[in-house]
Image (cartoon, rainbow, N blue to C red; front, side, top):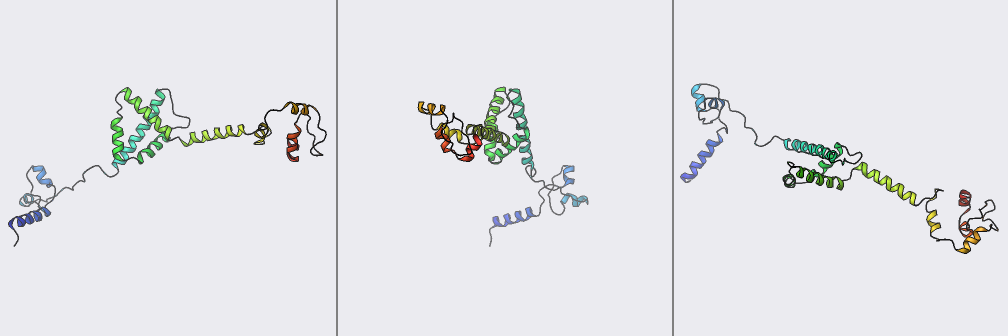
Length: 229
């Protein structure tokens, strides 16, 4: 035989299973205690009225509300960063629009846990001017760490032009000036030999100027001689 306490618990659980979690609308309007019985409470049965229970609302915010709220916060931070940059007379780099700033902040926050986000927001209040300056400096570092594609392409273009000009002479032949420089300065003997005309040309159809070092001219093939001289 089951114990009396166990039987009482089973009866209570059975009654709870047959009750609605919320009071009916009639009892709510009359401000009377509703027994929440299903399908109709005792008060509605006695009053011979239809008993209607409201739908139980889900606790917490609606689905997608936090994502929309966080996206709104990112957009607000991007606009604030752009406005403070102009206020401090240090506007963002060329091509760095608000949309690009939003994209980079979204990429950053998408990889952060909620605890890290809330900790960062709590440590960066925006009430005082000093707080806003610290926040702006911190976001400057964030933007520098995630350089925009536009700025990266411009940097790569400038580096490529600089690299090309360092290894190209007026003739357009890469590496030729490096090869000539690797020989070092002319010696007095080279200077004297460059002053006299060549006794013979490396190729019958090419005339090499007299001021060109014969050793350099001797190492150039016929195509290079015709191209440069």
